[in-house]
Image 1 (cartoon, helix red, strand yellow):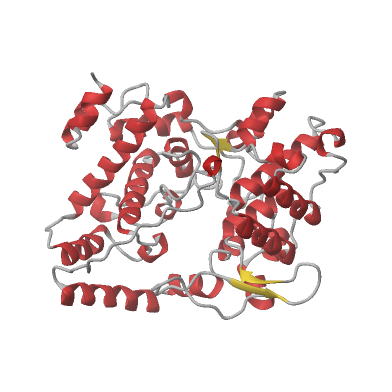
Image 2 (cartoon, rainbow, N blue to C red):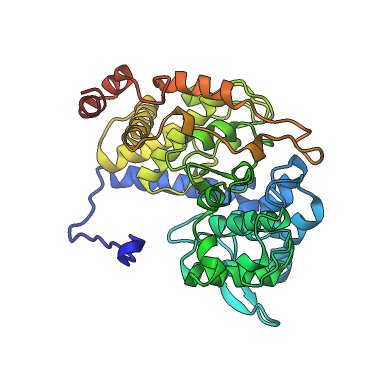
Length: 426
């Protein structure tokens, strides 16, 4: 789309949307809204937004610092956290359209060089443009995020690419001759802002940064791919597989590469009976590998269902599949069960994988970079790393994929995808 200068596709209809059972749908929706209004977990999300993760998860080692090379530590995380934002630059704001949570942030910086009155940074942005680059100035990171928003840049990829370049500069793989005289020093907040601008306009070194970490590493070589934190070319969200092991299988097999929006698996770890209606009962310690392939599958299916319903992931923190099935049934007149939703998730995932397989994705692409499989000596990860191979073995088994990563003929047939069978198994 970008190469064609296409900015958006807008679709609209002229007919009303009829609900099969308007009263039941309204009853269910109001009950969910009331649950969101009274849930303690939702209350802290409303108060601190996703930046609360900065405050809550640094003791667990879940906040990557200095391009994922050192354990997360308190000072930089609290300086960028939700509490600091609440007490300094956060202002009253509206929630997203019809949202009963209100976790979005709006900040107003009135003085200094980072003046802005605009949406504030989410957790992933604070990590990518902040802790990954050793920048702990909340105002500067908020301004860099604001520039990404108005220029149309993904904050995760922008920040990760800058942090990767900083490490390459530190290791001598990039020189000031390459950067146009810029010294890519860790913690230089104004450098981060300048590089965001250069990426947006394709100026000088910004054009190279705009390639993303995988392509940059392929050009630079010299082992740089080992610390380019991406899978299938997509840079990671700011959750560490060394802190919550289920991220390993989830990132490795996500349809579009290292992505948490195709399965927020860590919310099922360290919790009793996290998803009983889909058979996820018991407790799954965060730094163990057992059944993490199973968790990855269920987390991905949950995301596929939510995306199809156009429902925010956070609105489901207190819900089970039966709640979603009830909403769909009241809206459509269907009679779906929780098992039906699980099957739909499997079907959606199989279509993703079948398409990717046709495009050349294989088992060898379901991997993690060496950096996040290297234990850290400090912080909350305790020198531990996930066993990706054992997780993938389990994941392939529960998905019923062939050893090379192709969905099996049997699984596609059982999911009613005969047209895909004809395509992948001519």
